[in-house]
Amino acid sequence: MIDSKKLNSFLSQPRRIVLTSHRGPDGDALGSTLGLSKVLKSLGHETYIILPDGFPDFISWMPGAEEVVLFSENKTRAIELLDSAELLFALDYNSPSRIGDVEPHFVASNAYKIMIDHHINPMDFCDEYLSKPEISSTSQLVYGFLESMGWEEHLSVDGMECLYAGIVTDTGSFRFRSVDVGTHRVASIFMEKGMNNAKVHQLLFDNTDASRLRLLGYCLNEKMEIFQENQTAFISLTQDELNRFNCSKGDTDGFVNYALSLKGIILAVYFVEQNGLVKLSTRSIGNLAVNRVCSELFNGGGHMNAAGGTFEGSMEDAKSFFKERVFDNLDHYFNK
Ligand code: 5GP
Ligand code: MN
Image (cartoon, rainbow, N blue to C red; front, side, top):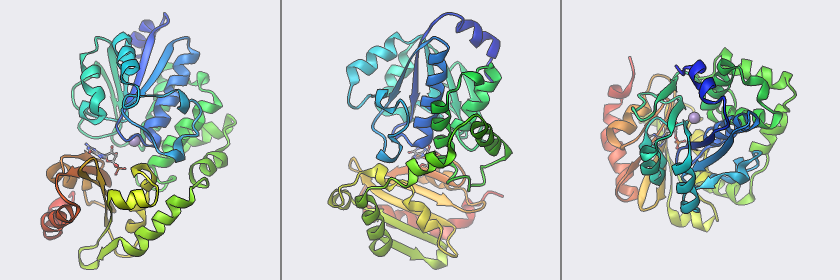
């Protein structure tokens, strides 16, 4: 738990604060950093957000997204900000390896470091931790943190939209098992305070490029493999295919859920070529722990029902390896 007295006293004078989140930022990464950053700004602090690399178009409408400093595009500025920060936040990641090239600068910084995250087994790399793997999203956790600090009245409607978008994207629109009464409580508070929930859903999901939908059609028609006897379905895409549809990796967020929605399927895997590696996104239903699949076999991790990792080799080898090591060993990955 974060010592709110100590933090409030540290923040009794204006501070220079940098908020960071993971590589391949998703809605929760961007939403939680923006939401918290806005509150800290309104408390009189100088705040900056540094993300390792770019985020997908469908979340780029979030108020303040244009101010985010991408390490991949603006290294000098990012390093300067990290070096001069007095307080660093690590949001939505549990290990410094998740921030790619930002890692050495985060680790070397003398700033006070606070982690707020919902992934299991956090590494020891910050001074204080708010780590709750049972909570749906870092954005939900950030709202709880604001309340515990007595700062919730400083959250603007813009900030609510960011946190709400983080919650919506990390819960499959309030569908996943991670949703609890607290998730709906936060949504209800935001609505009471004037946030337009329908607007956020529309900005997230009714704003799709034709190229992305055509790529989805192609994936479902031609690139989905169903292994009914193993209750598993794959979708895979090469870099060439992504290029052909004028799409990048972020555009395919959520495709894996279509494979999981198939009748009788409890394990879905999306394989995509990225930087010479194959990146895996895995999703499951029930007690099948895909975070163990990813940590034991693919140098990754995540949550029980949503995890990711990487494979060094070709797409075909990645799929064969997955079949070989997981299909006949599915029992091993069920949490009792
Ligand atoms: P996604 O499949 O959407 O990329 O990620 C699903 C979940 O798995 C996210 O919570 C994410 O943090 C986690 N995850 C994805 N890729 C990796 C990875 O390479 N390493 C670890 N440790 N976690 C990952
Ligand atoms: Mn998250």
